[in-house]
Image 1 (cartoon, rainbow, N blue to C red):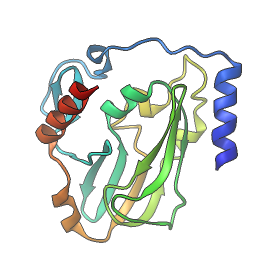
Image 2: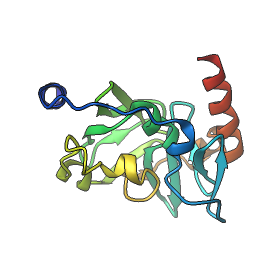
Image 3: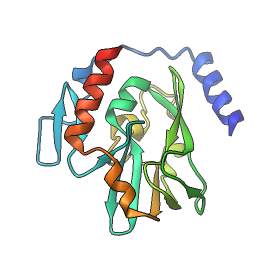
Length: 180
């Protein structure tokens, strides 16, 4: 695990990948507003999702929760070069780390917004050469659709009540950004 993160950092450094500044207006990966999302300060949040303050999103379908990092998170990280995926069958707990996302700027832990068992991971995230600037990982190009990280069989649905809705998450991000 650590060796892959170190390798990705060295590869990005060796290749001298530069990160162009992206303002919040360009962070919006979708054209215009539609029934699925709202635009807040140029960032995108989806109204059918729940959000953790650690910037992960969750979408529940029956007893299965799909988890990824938010558009806000990927924008702050920059170009993602590697995603550490959990093992299928692993048990995750709400608020506990289950992997990491490495970008050309930093490595950030990823926390589970719900507790349960991992039933599927998005192998496409490790099949894409993220360190090639012309081939961005889906985490950057499509954080809410193709950029999901794992699917979890939810253990306790009441945990979803502790997460933020789209409007509350957008306000949280605005307040957090104003502090920096």
